[in-house]
Image 1 (cartoon, rainbow, N blue to C red):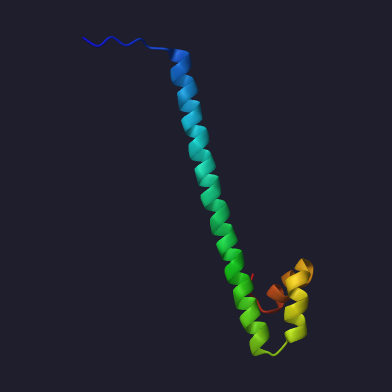
Image 2 (cartoon, rainbow, N blue to C red):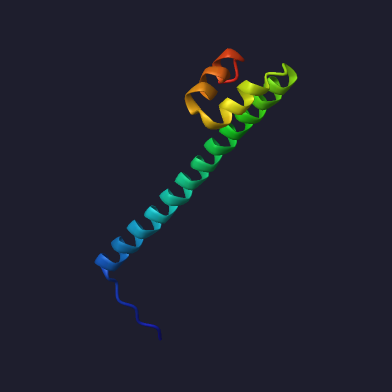
Length: 78
């Protein structure tokens, strides 16, 4: 016969740990999705700048985030 004892504190602690791990996993997935979306935006911006032969803008956008955001708006990529 198997006897088990119920430990309420241990049970609640386990539930909290499981929820915390689940939250972390969800947060990582959301973060990765955001990064993928941003990378796709920058990839599209790079294509637009290359097609327009705006090489100096492309070079500057790789170093200047604010300028990059300005170009994203200019090309309607946001």
